[in-house]
Amino acid sequence: MNTKKLIRKFLFATFWLAIGGGMLTLLIAAMGRQKKDHCKGFQITLKGAGDYFFITESQVEKLLKDAAKGKIKGQPKTAFHLQSMEKLLEQNVWIRDAEIYFDNKDVMHVSVTERIPVARIFNVVGKSYYIDETCRVMPLSTEQSARVPVFTGFPSKIISKRDSALLIEVREIANYILENGFWMAQVAQVDITKDREFELYPVVGSHVVKLGNAENLERKFHRLFVFYRNVLSKTGFEKYEAIDVQFSGQVIGVKANNRQAVDSAKLRYNVEKLLQQARQIPTEDQLAARALRDQQRINVDPVMSATAANPVANSPAEGNEAPRENENNETNQPRIPKAVMGRQNENNNN
Image (cartoon, rainbow, N blue to C red; front, side, top):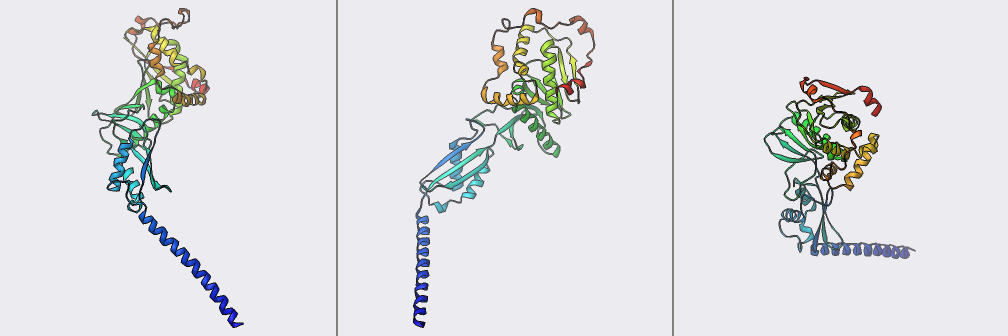
């Protein structure tokens, strides 16, 4: 009986020793193979906002070689510290995120996600740069030029919390314009005043829009949109030299005095083209939905396309024109702000 127990114990121990020895052999073989494995090549993938990029594959390759401290192909895989290489790549101002890994064929894959500009800023001393959605300042690129809202009059240096707060306001206004195809077509630039408030300069019309700060942007732009659609589309965009939408519940228009004569037919045609999509959008939600579709479908400025057409042939019939005020009477009158839309209008349209 004791002999059988000893034999069983011996066979059991031998069995587990054989399994342990086999596993140890496989582990040693795998470690030896890993030491002998070499990088057979690399593949770079760029991710961005569209088909164009502000950093090229050749630039990423140079950064990758600098991070690897030498050539990549042919080097042992154990010579690469992938996490350190990712951090070095992310130090580039145009790279937001980098991921590096090897596949089962010993090929290094490098996936780079670049930063996306949301606004271009010109400061008071004339220096220009981009900012992204995190308010990160980025230099201009020699590879591409981003079609983003332009802001002028920013302080020369960002040295205080107040400057950083102003930069956040720039980002908020830029994002709102970017998400709306109508305002991307209409807003030529946004100027920052000495009081750190924002004024919009349009593509169509010679007026200035006083926006104030970046609070309640949806309501402010909605009031301006309703004013465009219900007032300026009838009176003409040359009637007012300033439109103030910063006060809740109203739009204040400052009439233009001593304004030079303009081609009314051409301007009216441009207004009609600009508001063509507006007539199809009675609500703000529908306007935002159409803006997203426009952003994907339209690669050229619809307003600039409208000016290339024949404005006289396509202008409204004479009987449909809005009545014009007596220019002499208007010239002799002082420049007085006039509330053209009251609180009731905004409540009805919002």
